[in-house]
Image (cartoon, rainbow, N blue to C red; front, side, top):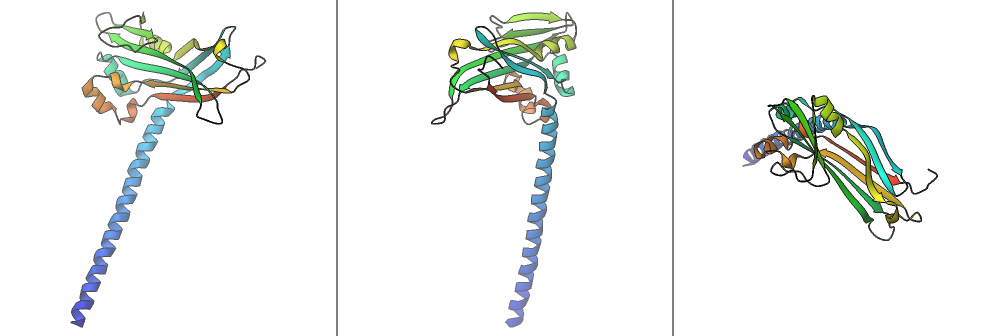
Length: 219
């Protein structure tokens, strides 16, 4: 009885040792996988760098100007060449800072861009609108054709004199900041492509910036 009990305990210790080792190995493997995913995603996001980004005060309003330095990843460009339009969104919120409560939203602005390739004419087209653009109806969006992808992308990469707030909405005695976001909108891709794009770092194209809004005329 004594020998049997001792033998049973030894086998249990071996089993527990093996389980602990397996758990440690699984955790290390999981950490490695997440590390690789984070690294790849970070590389993709780093492709969108701001070459020029500033908000200037005009006579009657505050205007944002920005340029972004990025090229389309191979998979994204291939989809574009096959006739899949790409949608980009630029959003900016101007908020009034409040120490006693959450910051108050003063203005919210959106800039929607649709980039597409037209095989029949072999030209690229960019539509720009303050409202979401759909395939079925472009609404009041302004469209312009270009002979090359580089010319069309130059328009998408650039935001020129975009009014984000009227002067009368800003009180110089208070503090304000703005949150800016620019991204490739995956929600407007065709459904089969959406399923493959979500979670694929190649399709993660975004840029964010949060900064204090200067209300001092001298700055």
